[in-house]
Image (cartoon, rainbow, N blue to C red; front, side, top):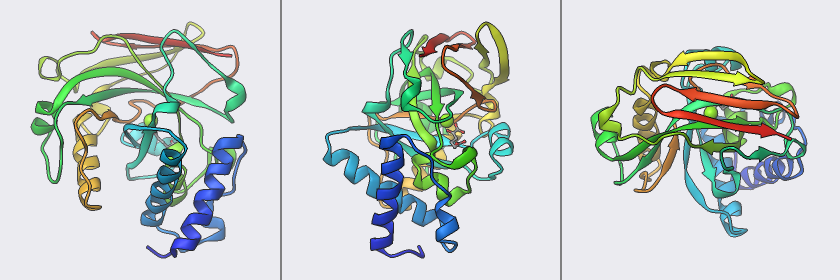
Length: 261
Ligand code: OOG
Ligand code: MG
């Protein structure tokens, strides 16, 4: 880390103000060029303390920038993690309010619900054994940075652009499905915008959880049982506007739809 606790707290204030009041920010690294990825996670942890203090709940974690399509789209070459808050969840077949968002994009992801604690160095097989079910998810990312342009320390401080998420479709037993070959199709207003297969996420979406658990272990933390984990967009993210109807179809796992109003 390069920044002191006072600076981390000030950056957490800045990021949360933008998140709460729906305004953009310049990259934190513009003012703090020495800021590291670790500083970014320190800002995220500081934000979590504040979210919990005002009654929000941590329901799980997100991995992001886990597919080549996403890394290329954002110009970043390593995955990053974020916190999933209860207040960001939205129901399927519902509506998402555009006036609480800046410039949202949607991503189709495989999500895992865990039933056992995971800690330290784990394998894909151990992740699957600790999984209660896998379920389709759509993430609405909404970077607080101008023009959705950032670097890794800045985006991590902004909770990896976390904004809304919707899970639905058909949950499956993770041992009964080949998690590398789930086809996904993203439609906006009846037109296909992107398609892909789940191996795009680190060759197997469970690898995102392997990395997440290692990341937590390096901080003396584990992933508790009952965590909802989103493993990252399979395709590039698709921009959306008010009035758009979105459908994400997942092979053998049903579909998720909702509308931006
Ligand atoms: C960062 C978050 C990326 C994913 O699934 O890859 C992400 C961003 O692109 O704004 O959530
Ligand atoms: Mg995502």
